[in-house]
Length: 161
Image (cartoon, rainbow, N blue to C red; front, side):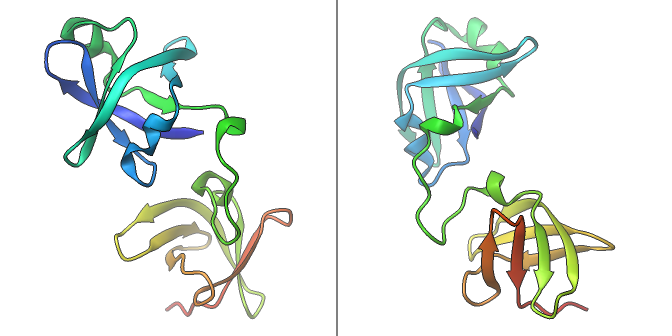
């Protein structure tokens, strides 16, 4: 499961900035072993130390002790094995579980499949691609009537033009 990506350098001692997809941002630090994407696939890495720093998270990864070593990490995705993630509460979903699901209007019309989701501040939004691309708010019990992961379907009450 992708939790974020390394977005830049911080200081001269090998620290990097992390753009975290977790909520809250510093929850990416709950995992001391990461998988980092690279040219040769995913490689395991150990977080030596990390903290929230303003609107970002900064981390020092074991074995990266200076800026020159760490520069190669920029753009690297950060992942953890799926089985290490906590189970989602009812009516809460990991975005990766929603991507690819069919979106069906309450009248039975299939709108397309969830391509990806966006965080807008007010609520998350599903980008649904079918005959056309639609932005559908992911608001449980108002727009989203139900999610059936086993059936691969999200039922919605959403009017489109």
